[in-house]
Length: 176
Length: 175
Image (cartoon, rainbow over all chains, first blue to last red; front, top):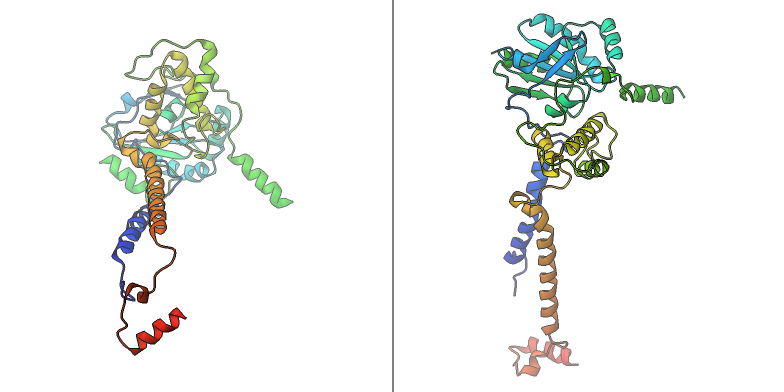
């Protein structure tokens, strides 16, 4: 006979077996953004590409080795891209040793040219007509920026608009 | 009304144009090649669309996430589905094409995780929990059935009351 108020060890253990795994999954799961796409590209060599910019000049990853690169996927129909555009213009002028490249994502060249004529242009914008390079970099939407060091390794992927406080330390990392 | 107009304007501003004029500009990459993997025998042209659709339905749209690549109309999904079709037509297998996208987006892209040792718990877990629950329910029912319908009184089993209080209690119970 169980003493009144005494703990039934069998029930306690059975309860713990059910509750502890649930607590573990809740504790670890609440810390994650369920919509965040895992970044599998950071720490790997940047995919090779050979694209032309709006002026017809060829750009390839091979030729960029030895230089820090910021590859920014963007489009004129994307609100946050417009927000970060002045910051990228400013950064491209302030850090001439860093190669800034825009990659146009699902947009029309004329729309891009009009936008750049109006808002300013400080670096080349590459055309990725089939989205092949976006797929190679694992791009899910715009804006997305890849910070590539001098060895050609992706150091960081920023899957949102850039801000001065996020851009500065990332530039410092790839310029080392 | 102004709110509706403003919302409509915002939606249009976030929507990519339906068409494009990029056809005139050549890409540097051969879309029909997966680097390092040789393509096999291409399927008959009339089967390409269905095969591509089948593969696209197993991959998650990275933008919509609740939809497959084949069902989504987001720019990312449209580009991916187009690439799948090109790779199928070039002779790559379903496994090659899935591996190509997993390398770029991670295993997260698969709508159904692969049934291997790492994901065993996902596939076996619900069955184990259900089986355990059924076994527990069956055991409990067996124990219940073993219990006699009527519990005999202590006096029926030759129990002698300890004191007057117990004697009175037993007498009242028998009444």
